[in-house]
Amino acid sequence: MTITSQSQQDAWTLFLEYVGERCSSTEFTNWIEPIRKVALHEDRVVLEVPNIFVQEYLLDNYKEDLTSFLPLTAQGEPSIEFLIAEQIRQVLPVEEKKVPFVDEMPQGSFSLNPLYRFDTFIEGPSNQFVKSAALGVAARPGKSYNPLFIHGGVGLGKTHLLHAIGHHLREHHPRLRIYCITTEGFINDLVDNLRNKTLDKMKRFYRSLDVLLVDDIQFLQNRLNFEEEFSNTFEALIHQNKQIIITSDKPPGQLNLSERLIARMEWGLVANVGIPDLETRVAILQYKAEQRGLRLSQKVAFFIAEHIYHNVRQLEGAVNRLNAYCKIRNLDVTEETVETSLGELFQGPTCKKISVESILRSVSLIFNVKISDLTGGTRAKGVAFPRQVAMYMAKELINDSVMKIAAAFGGKTHSTLLHAWKKISGQLAKDELLRKQIDMAKRSLEA
Ligand code: ADP
Ligand code: MG
Image (cartoon, rainbow, N blue to C red; front, side):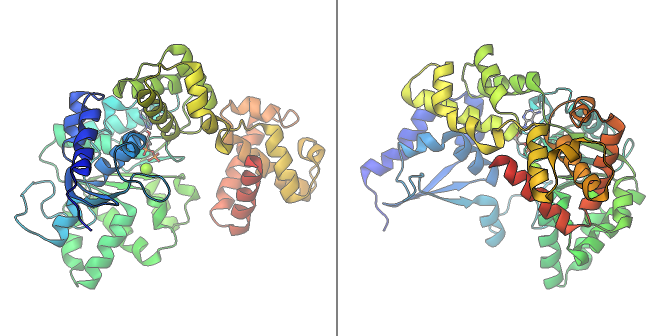
């Protein structure tokens, strides 16, 4: 039932006023102003946003504040129905604006997130290399590393760097035909074009690009038919020196894709985005806080960074939560407010400190071997393999030097550790059982 009650009409306007006083004017213009209120119902508000990023931005930054203004769902969340303008236009192609970049772009296209730029990417030892590779490609597309393959865990900035390359290219090489797509978007494109018998058109489109940015290539695994079409596109572009940049949650060798495609992806440069160290986490926290108009002392930033260290997305979540908590209650940011507002994030399972000891404990449980055997020298096959698994997990999960980690395995050398890591990484791509065992071991770490 649609209502026009004054109180609800005011709710959105009041929210806008509230936010307007709390964020910078650039932030307001970029993110809040483009939101259009479509309808007010008793139980929900319908908002039109230009793209998914604006929706995510609103929810990431103002969810808690919104609960004070808007109707709530049964779960206590702000009850908002989002309409995405890009999608509406695709369904109803009325008076479409001719923006050159979007023109002729097939369905899966998405705009670049305006926040993901090089100048908003905080550098540290864990990402310096990959950032300079990304800058190199953005400066001389098709002429430096091709393809550039960026891999790393969730929330470490892969998409951020991919879009940063996109922005840089659009600003510095406006003539180039650039296209940024998620692997899922590519697959959807392909499905649509097959259905509409327009595959040739799609092929022509992709092959006419100068730069192709592909996010999350791991979703191409086990999609045989799509893999072939992707490989063809890939090769056609590479052979014309057109730049390709790919992101993935694993290095090429660990992806379950054809050997040919893996080899092609390893042709250029493979660069890893790692977990940021303490100082970088502090810098990221301070930057994200500043963007939101929140003052974080050095001491408080260190306090948070010491407790949240898995990925940058979690750091961002912490800043948002702290921001909402303190602004709604009009409190200063102190260690105390941090404890009360973020306490559960700190104790959350993913934030528990993982040690070689805890990994040994869970591997010994899953593989049914003694911990003392895992750290001892026995080469019995039943022990050597789980030991390698434990080494693999330690290298993946512990943010410490390889030498130190190796030493914790009863004084092994770093080359033994690297050898184990390589062997298990390679096997993981093919061995479903091993994947499950490692997943189980990881879960028992968190228990
Ligand atoms: P991924 O694609 O690797 O899962 P994203 O690129 O989506 O991760 O990053 C998650 C969030 O963390 C984004 O909001 C991004 O802007 C932010 N982020 C990641 N790394 C950095 C960094 N080095 N500096 C600033 N923000 C970062
Ligand atoms: Mg991503």
